Length: 107
Image (cartoon, rainbow, N blue to C red; front, side):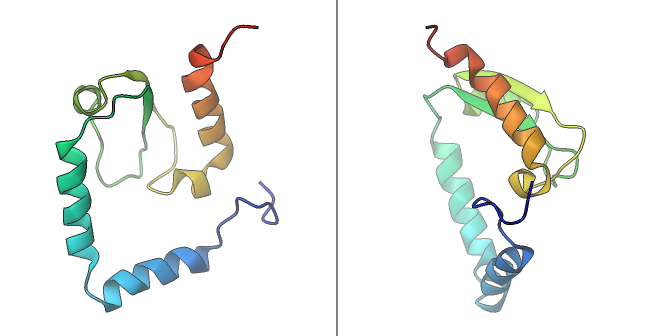
């Protein structure tokens, strides 16, 4: 992907966001809030889930199926981590197209 496209997020933006959480000592409380709210809800819309090898937490398929009752696609990536859209944009886009292809209306 060309770094001049509209979807490219420079590394400095990610560093700035991380620094903001670190300097204000709000990273843990933010993570706790996300954890509490995401476990309280299930997602009723068709969803897909990717398991990334460099991600700190490897979501087992059984857990993904509980959190996403309409899980239509689950796959393990060969490479990539938490920022898959930034690290492996082509692989992610192809994966999303594959995952949601079945939902397209036939014309």
